[in-house]
Length: 224
Ligand code: DC
Image 1 (cartoon, protein in one colour):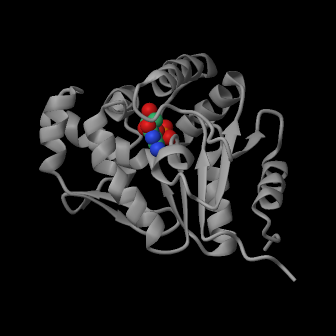
Image 2: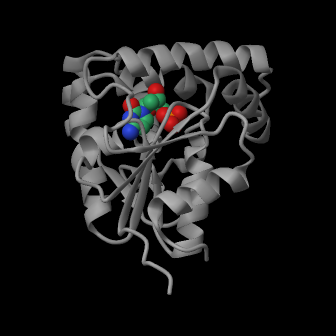
Image 3: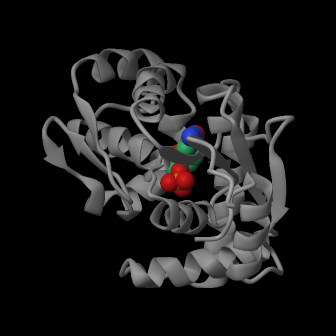
């Protein structure tokens, strides 16, 4: 008899560690909705850039009070700003470059927290991000933290960037990733770190099937 999967799964890890690939695969096998929470930070960043709001906490505190961010549940879930689905614009270079600055602001994090908790409370949900297991859902029944070397992540990010139509070699991707890691890990609010009860999986040398098998074992649910 197969064990049922936990109702909510938190997946954290640095950029390009494989969170979305794993989250999306688990979601499609077991019927979860999947939210890549980085999209929420990217959506605020895009809107702020377009409105000329700088990455300053006081300015953003005012700004986030006047925009409406919504999540359309699914796998993957989509993100709307003031009723407009911006999901396909969130990898634009201007967003990529600035998102770590906006996502480090306490006002932005506070505004996005309830949305993530509501998403988790409203049904079977997998959320991927940086602080899901530590801050957003510290009581989540299942937490996975993915690690991978900078080189491996840079090689993946460069391939992903090409598929998004952005030309970026591994060296450029490595520079971006190191810069983002440093901001994400050193910020004062919700820095990137594994929850004490997270299962840590290193994806550097593991093919995706092996990562999935470890995750399924950790979650205690049988393969679908
Ligand atoms: O995962 P990503 O590259 O789309 O994340 C974009 C930015 O948002 C990145 O700088 C980290 C930040 N982020 C965060 O601070 N907390 C989350 N739960 C998800 C993303």
